[in-house]
Structures are given as structure tokens and as C-alpha cells.
Length: 150
Image (cartoon, rainbow, N blue to C red; front, side, top):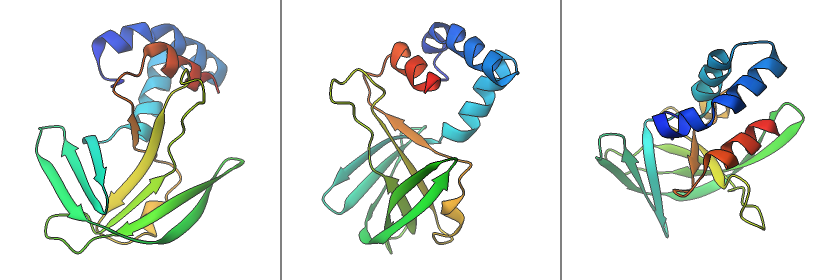
């Protein structure tokens, strides 16, 4: 969504403000944020124990997943709780971690959740430098800007 030209232009002032706070250019700040949040997955549907991932080209990857526990990671001063899921289905990612969605009570903040996925177990997925992110389809540039400021 942040690669959408209309949203991008609406966020230019927020990129400039955050870049200034961090002592870097607006473009450097945006590039850093995208490198942490961006993902080739453009949508996700969870239906009971089945997760369907929609990729950028519109193709889908579906698997039945089993909850196998949770893990806590740290990011700065924050402890982050991730639910862990595994799948044995052909073509599905073997390991998926989902973080509890963040939803504001008044629905004005950025509704989003983070996830990680792969085929090489959970240890690699605990890397605190990447946070592939899904946002609600009706997310606005103002909500992104407010989230950046937090």
C-alpha cells in the first residue's frame, strides 16, 4: 500500500518529518520502513485452520495450519507475542508466525498485524528486523502518518 503513488504523495510530509527526526532524508526513511514492512503477500484470509495467502500476481497459496505454541520476541523496549503455526500441505509455507492484530477502540489508528513465514523453522522467523505487515483495506494516509509518529 505504501508503494501506491496516491498514498505515497499523501505521506510525503510524514516521511520528511520522520526523516528529520532520524537525521536522514525522507526517501531514506521511507526505504527503511518499506524494507521492514513490505511483503510479496498482498492479502491473507484465515478460515478456521486454513490460511490462504494472496501473492502480488494474484496467485494463492493455501494450507491447513496447526497452532504449535507461541514465542515472545523483543523489539526495542517492546515484548512481542507471536502465535506459531505449522503446515505439512504441499506448496504451503511450513512455518507461519502471526502477531495479534492492533485495533484501536475508536478505529482511527492504523489497524494492522505483522506476520512472518518460511520453510526453515521458527528460529529464522524470530529476526526482529523485519515486520511484514497487513493493513485493513480502508486504511488512510492519515492513519499511516499517525502510526509513523508513534
